[in-house]
Amino acid sequence: MTKTVVISGYYGFGNFGDEAILALLLQKLSLLDFEVVVLSANPRQTSMDYLVNSIFSFDFHQVAGLIKNSDILISGGGSLLQDVTSLKSLFYYLWVIFLALFYQKKIIIFAQGIGPIKNCFARFLTAKILKHCTYVSVRDARSHVLLHNLDVNSELLCDPIFSVDIKPNKKKGTIGVQLRDFATMNDNLLFKLARYIVKDFFDKKIVIYSLQNSIDFAVCEKFKNILNSLNSTIPVEIVNDASIEQIIENISGLEYMFAMRYHALVVGLKAGVKSVAINYDAKVQKLAEDAGLPIISMNASEDFDRVIYDMKHLNEAHLVEFANSHVFNWSGIEKVLND
Image (cartoon, rainbow, N blue to C red; front, side, top):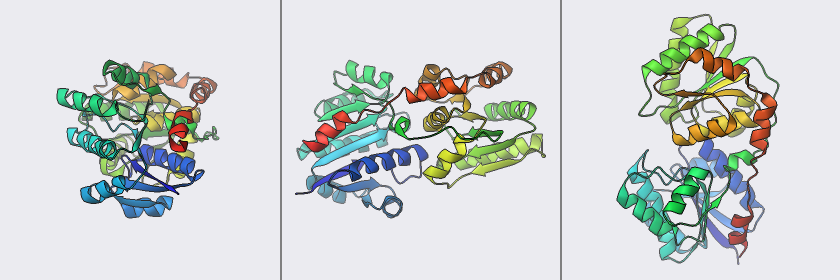
């Protein structure tokens, strides 16, 4: 009898990193004999993009019925269980996991970045629920330590995007800038970054990446206008509404990149793109420190001349070597799926 797997995550919102993770997970599941249903904020788009069954994430009655009649829940990847973005979203993803526990289903926590969880009750609830999951895996040491402190057993993996086959592309002398809106986004950072890009890369094309239009596009458009106001002769382009494959190919051809999003930096590392991490979140800081990338804080207090010097003197081969040293281990997940 065919088993049904339900996938819960930040899907259907047009976020590059989460959609790339979903594509990888579905590719893996396609090798096994499962019926797969994805919970999505845009089930029609998800069904069209991946040729998979999908239902609306927030149709609570339908979600409960689906999980009741399923065999396995996969929650993740990405950063679902944290309350920095939203306490409400944390409770939603815990509710989905709790439903699977209530109906006695197998539960895989799939390479998630856990935390920060600042709310005391949310920390208690997260620990209480995760302790009873079949298999818990996290993508970074910080999450691993957090769960250990909450008395939750977990396996430390890398982020699934490290397993994407990305070859270093021919560098086109293009500068990439990947921005997202966030509570700490500010004009000082945007203007200072623009001034130094205009000063150091006046003879290059600038490509700005909006990797989730609902969050990224407005700040990307603002940054484009700032660049144009400083030097109207520099060619500037915004890339948005591109496919996963197009984004990966485009980023892999960059000479240099300034990026906020974790998965933009992972793709850059895999492709040997000399990058600066814009540190809006602890996961970005940890990745940059581990990979040896220079970092700009959101208050832009650094010596940008030094940051850009350090970026230019990164070793492409070392970046690729770092990325390729991260091999995603499917064995724990496969064991639960096959049992």
